[in-house]
Length: 184
Image (cartoon, rainbow, N blue to C red; front, top):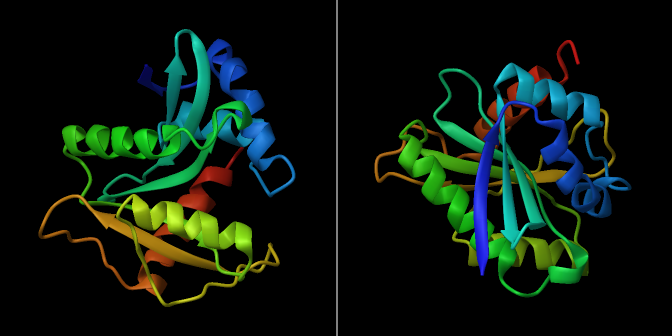
């Protein structure tokens, strides 16, 4: 049975349990350095969500928000390669959705996905669509990474004040990334 926990703040011993999952998924794909993640958690702009089977961490997600923002950003989500294709990722997203709703601070959840057409990116897009996220049309080009991105969103309340237009979502995502790297 999969269980979930959310951690606020930096806990080195907890990070050690999920670091292998994070590195499997993101070390060669532009993941943030550990010092930046530590800073995000210490500053209180991020939360670490972990999926456990027994006492083993099998999935992780790093979410973030800015003060006054009504959108929760899923910055990273990964499942241990030995536990993939078992529905753990979808269960982790469902948990994050419940957590965000119970907090009462968020109108929607947003993510960014690579926009390049490839089998891997199509599978990712399909995963998020199965989790009820909606893809926006706008394609964003960062100046510091070569691949283009698109935003996806999932409203948590019927009358969300969070925009659903891709360009507007990327303004929010960009502010979150900028704050993530500030003073890290």
